[in-house]
Image (cartoon, rainbow, N blue to C red; front, top):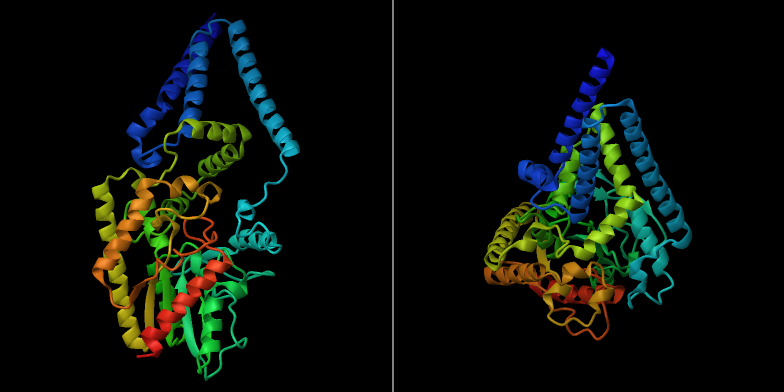
Length: 451
């Protein structure tokens, strides 16, 4: 009798703990008590997953609490095993079914008019994806994409993308030009010899008497300050450019749109969590493995797709919900941060004897009626987000008001285009790269070579 009594007590204890765990797993309670853990918003898919988990815990908690006979305990085990098997069977079915009926999805960029009929496009964008895996930690700048060699994309050990020049190496007679920027300068829409840097080098060497050697140090996701750090590293290592050109706007604004702060790296929160949440125990490694398994689950992915149909705004960036006044203040802070970097750049210019120009790039979200079909472009919901568009306009207006020395707004370069050029809010085709390079060349000649 004492054994049976002990079992009942144990069952009630298990039931109580499961009920408490179910109540604690409520998404609203988690968001209230642990705001730093989940952030200001929680994705609807995660709320659904937590609610389902809460229901299961409460159901089995009540069942355990009421289990006062061995038969009822066995029935609970049977229900738990049955539910587990059903979930596993559904997951295996979805994995198998989707693998059979869904062929590998082609890169969406191959469907936009700029690349639809280009025979080289499939190989090029495949190399773009492959080069992502060559991104590694880099001292001072955070990360760098380098040491990649393909048919259309080649990057050396310094992170410089292969650029058209008259020779493989600079000579003593060459004027050295460094070009910095994010993925738009890197050329995520162009082959090595058709990037902005390559077209710019070609124009310089064809139209000027002196010879020039151009380096493309554009790196995906870099902001202006990271580019300055990279320049400092190169100067420290003995490189001595005659001219340094910066091509910015998209990443500085998008970084602030994500975080609600100026001067923040792109995807800063994800990077921070990867560093700070590195497992330090067996429990930590188990949790990381568990979350990765959940992310790869087809059931979870189905919940994600379903939740997007009901979520009014699936964008997670902080500035999405900013008022107009908050966006204007943020724009002023972005311009202030840019001005501080300009001051640093000016000191470097004076100390190392190079000339510089900073260009504010053209962006699709600055245009009221672009000719591109927005529905075909990458991330159309973000392009159409009013806060996203407003912030870009406000930052560019603020930059024009500040009238920074040697900062040139070329955002109107592509506004008279007659064919689609943008394939998302900032990246452009090879035709667009050529137009930008021509504008850079004209501004460069008028502001440096004619003075």
